[in-house]
Amino acid sequence: MVTVTPNRAGPGAGAETQSLFGGVNATIKGLLLAVQDYSVLAWASIADIFSPPFYLSDLLEQIDVIGVGALPIIILTAFFIGGIMVKETAAQFQRFGTTALTGNAVALSLVLELGPTLTALLVAGRSASGMASELGSMVVTEQVDAMRAMGTDPGRKLVTPRVLATVIVMPLLTAVADFVGLVGGYIEAHITLGLSGPEFWHHAIDALGTNDLIHGLSKPLVYGFIISTVGCYKGLWVKGGTQGVGRATTSAVVIASVSILATGFMLTTLLMYLFPA
Image 1 (spheres, rainbow, N blue to C red):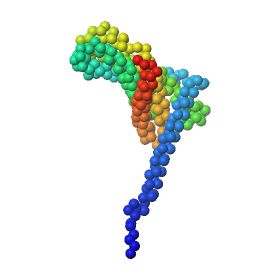
Image 2 (image 1 turned 30 degrees about the vertical axis):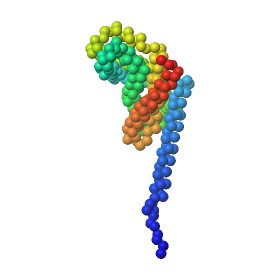
Image 3 (image 1 turned 90 degrees about the horizontal axis):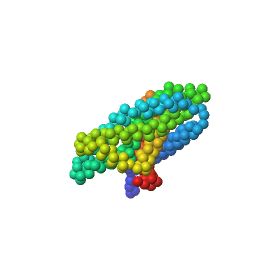
Image 4 (image 1 turned 180 degrees about the vertical axis):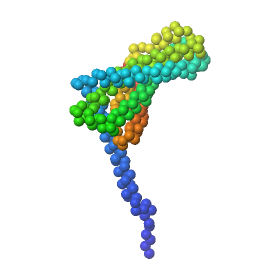
């Protein structure tokens, strides 16, 4: 007598396996296409800077929107971050009798890492989402198609001014954040540790060297490029109507923020090798 063992996997197992591999394959292809499209947009945004036509009025408008518009939140946040740094470390400074080095710690932390990264994350949350929603709305309402029909390059008109403006204002915003953070740190150090102004600022200025300033002001250039290109890419590649605009806005902030943190790690390693402290 022959015993037949039933197929426990069921008749649909092969189809489910094929469907799984098909889904993974489609996801990988989609990611590769997205990287390709983003790379083309990023390269075109750089190349368009060096050839006419130039949209100077759009550039100035974006500098105002991205740079001046972000100043209040940058100033407010940096001020409290500087104060928090001193408040959190005041007990340790007093414990080891190193209160005079408070200015050194605040200056180095802000200029090397906290200032550039904090500024970039704030601008990403404000401007990357704004670019994605604005350009996404233009795509959904077919304004971008109308620009192409009239012979205007949307990349040159919409993307390049935003990229260039963000790259220009990011080092300036970072410098403002560093200074305001130091002011907040000084006020907290004066209240908590009793440090005088000359004592705090003398140590803060002496702690910073040329290489430290190169570290702190070169990162924002890269961060600005990432923020603007990601925001423009997610906006111009919107799918799914108005709901797609919302998804693109959220995705732009998430991708830009994660990219900033990952790039910051690599830039820190590279800059420490090229410009050792």
